[in-house]
Image (cartoon, rainbow, N blue to C red; front, side):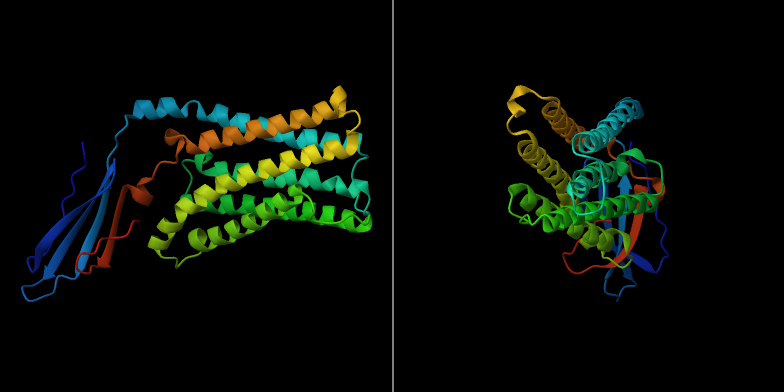
Length: 306
């Protein structure tokens, strides 16, 4: 049953009209235009959002019961991808260094898998995992994880450019490098726009509401682009390293293929968690249960979403 809301107004105020706006299946917007006396222009409106629950608490709890297992699965898969990448570069290609040699190149795949896949995926999941924390704190964690992914990815990109320049290898000629640079640039833009729209004060609510669907869509799209770029890089590295024996199921080839399959599984599981409706972070009472905003209404105007 929808909660009742009673508003008491002084006798000098007169209700001119009210307008109902359907918001979604579990909310209703009511706009009441008030006159400040008989000769006043009804310019001020009261915007009320009252939410009801369409799903029973039992259904919600049952749905959330599987969330920790899915999240745990992403962590196992993500860590496995990082470890396998580290073992591959460490055991089959001489380890790690920062001297312009092959060992410096090995820093590149490790940093990109750690930053643009594992940490990026975890940043996407924070709104599903931290369901009862302050929304602002979750936003800050979301931004910090993206920042860590950005810094680690910059190290990986510098490593591969430094190696290519040291060995006189052309830069940015392969499909892998094109996709990787495009993904990285979009990632930087997404991070900066996210800071501007959602963390810094002063951004209009209507602008946040407009940008939020784009932010969510491009967040998942860029994770898919990161995974696709990794798969291209794995194939490229295997062909450069073991082209003559790759078809013979040599251990390095199998290890690279397993890494690719784990990356795909990681991406699929992240996408499933993020798009499953009952895993969404619920609105907290202090955030959205009852939002009251005063706004100057123009003729035929409607309130913006909170």
